[in-house]
Image (cartoon, rainbow, N blue to C red; front, side, top):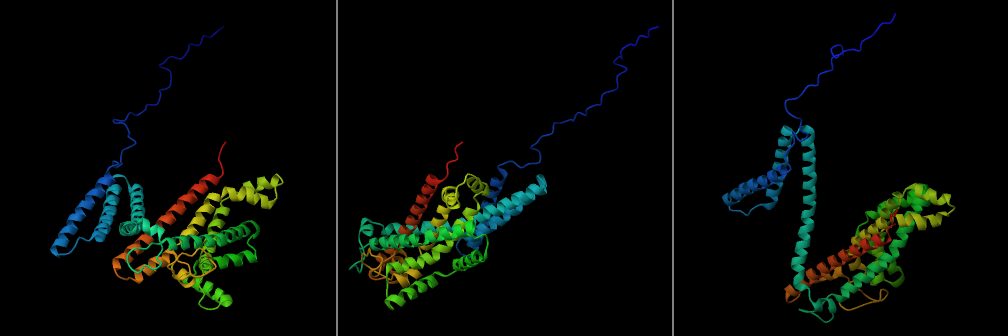
Length: 374
């Protein structure tokens, strides 16, 4: 006897769960302010606060307070964007916009003095720039005319000698601290001394170099090499600290891979560690040079004031651009405007030299940086 089983019909199948259909599609952009809102709010706030400060200045017969307007505009903008964002987007997004505004305001605040100094130096220094300024010295010049060739050459020679002294000492010290020191007692002592040297005032470095040379050559001695020694005291801790941080960033896996191939430690440092960190080391070296190239006090004590050309670091006084700017501005003659123009032109030349050195450093770092080919 056979029993036939019929397949289940559609009416016997279990009911499928119903999927609710929303009346309107969910948008991912809901609850967000348009991109133009912060800029429009900032512009409106700036215009409104400018009108307020303009009315206040007219009421008290005073000038328009640019600094106060900028500060009040930033505070009002941050308050408004936080409230509006919290209402529309929620507390998390409002906090993000507030922090973004604070960071941006801090960046603008930090750029204001830099831009102001650059504009002031360029606008005042252009008046003293001429072919004579870069081709003549101040020998036998008491009024108009003359130039800063002797100071430019003195700055380059003194800074070059200081770099030759400081860069090898700083790099080798950092290599010892990272690769050989292993945080032993000597390494900790060197680190402590480097930290102390970082905070030494520049005048103290100048007095140290003057006292050192006075022991051998007698009091009153002035030489360019004395200025180089004083600047090297200021450069060495900067080179050590920057190089030390760059060497720490080199992965230990690179060292271990080199050791596994039987490469000695000194060759691993020379062929693996230093090339890997050469870009950062070059940047640190240029920062140290920029730190000392504009120092006036130590060079005024050690190298002295000179008006003639001197290419010998070991014989006689040697001029430098910082001392040239100081002497021209403080010892104004007749006409006074000629001395002021030469001072501003010397300051502009010094800034240009620092900029050129930084560009050269970036080029060197790009050329010698390790190639990341596949």
